[in-house]
Length: 220
Length: 98
Image 1 (cartoon, helix red, strand yellow):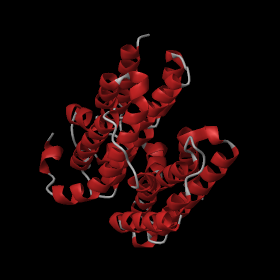
Image 2: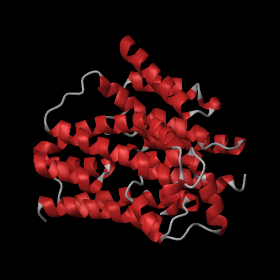
Image 3: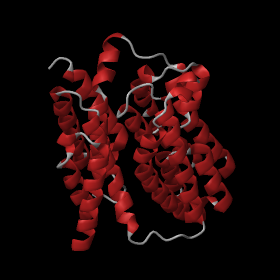
Image 4: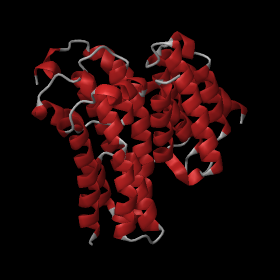
């Protein structure tokens, strides 16, 4: 827990986390509105409180709404959960805490919080927990607002734009040398080609592309 | 399985996979550590492509593409806030033009 308590640049972390959390909150409104007819109001909010995973929750509700079974839901959620393995592997060398501290950090492990942590000097605990807590609050509050019937209006497109923009920015700040930029460009273009040919490949297919490109990059 | 049980199972899988990857698995070593060291930039580039192209509704609307293009113009500065600001400005312009 020491590493979590020591870092002192909380305002900078929060400044970076707020626009991300705002977009996550808007996505939460969408989730709340979509999930409420399927799960009911209480369980919709409970799902966001317990899971804090847009990908898994949207997959669950989408399958249930289209008549999918519980087995189909679990079969779709397990591959989505596998993305946490490379995210954890990237983050792990930047963590200084013991198992209990890392367990706390893991509650907030998302693409966005790992990216924000990589954009700062290690240790990463404080960045992940602070940005993750803000994002979590936004996700749950957004879900509640969506269940209550909130309307997004003009900001929906801004929220939709936020995620690709954020990931482009994170790819840039995690580029330390020319080789990283080349690998990022190759991975992005290869994923675009993959998704155009096989849209069902999704994020998991892209993840495989990223790992293959990173592995091949060592021989280049 | 009841809906409550299903939601609980989804939450357990999600939270459990996070905990295992961060609190249980050892840090990568050797050649795997080298791959992980090279992984962040390609990983986020992949996520950018996936969020642009991989939505259930098909490709993203024009303002989102304009946002991504504006963000790409700033990447050489390696500033997350600058890239986010440029991207959102691109989305606003794109929405005004649409």
